[in-house]
Length: 299
Image (cartoon, rainbow, N blue to C red; front, side, top):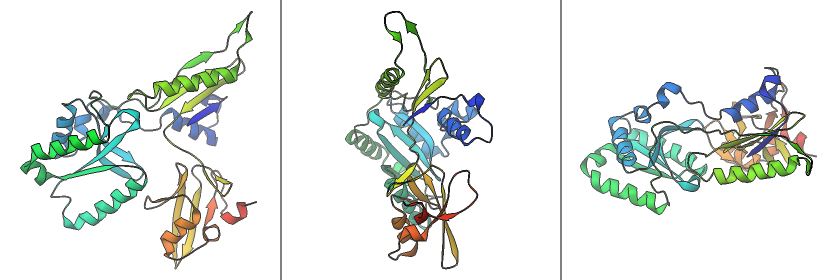
C-alpha cells in the first residue's frame, strides 16, 4: 500500500484521526526492545527452541511468536517474495485431544487469511527428529523457501527515505508526480530483499512534506461501491445476542477472527440462514458516535 501525505505528525492534534493512521504506518508492529534482542528467548518451550535452532543453524530466517489478528503463531519461516510457512509446535501437555478441535478451528481461520501451516507434536519430534526435520525441509523447499540467512533480532518493518525538491536552470521545478512514481518503483525493487518487507518513502516538496508509504496492511473495505473505512464497527442483534465485527485489512472481520468479503456472507455465518446482510448489520464509522443500518449508505 502506498500512502501519500502532505502533513507531518507534529502538526496534528492528538484528537485528529489522521494521527492514528500515520502512527500505524510509522510503526505497524510494536516490537518490545528487550525481547527483540534475542529471538530465541521468545520461544515458549524447549521444543520450540529446538525447532528454531535447527532451522536457524541451516540459515533459515525464523521469527518466533508472530502475532496475526487475534492469534499468535509459534514461529514463521520467511522466504523470498513474501513467502512464509507458519510452524506450530504442539506440546503434548498443552495440546491434548481436548485442545485439538480448538487448535484446528484457529488454524482454519488463519488459513482463510492466506497462512500455510506445518504442525508437529513434541513426542513425534523426540522419537523421529531426523525424519521430521527432513519432512519440514522438504515442505520448505516445495514452497520455494530457501535459507536467506538467520536473524537474531526482529527485522525493521518500516524504512524511510527523504527527497528534497530542487530547482535547476535547465529543467525548471521538479515534477512531483514523476518523483513519486520513481520513488514507488525504487521501493518495489527494495521490497524484493527479505529485510525490507515494508517500505516507507518520504517525499518533501517546497510547500509541505509528502510521504509515500508501502505497507503490508490493507485498509478500507469496498463492497457494492460503498466504502467502509478501516476501523468501522459493525453490530447486529440476533436471537437476543449482539454480534460484532470490524473492518480490518480490507474485509469484514468477526469477533472470532473470520473474514468476509460481503455483509451477507458474514450474516449467514451467524444465522445459518439466507440473510440480507445490508439489512442485518448496522455500522458506526470511525470518529462517529451514532449507528446506522448499512443499506442507508447505498446510493
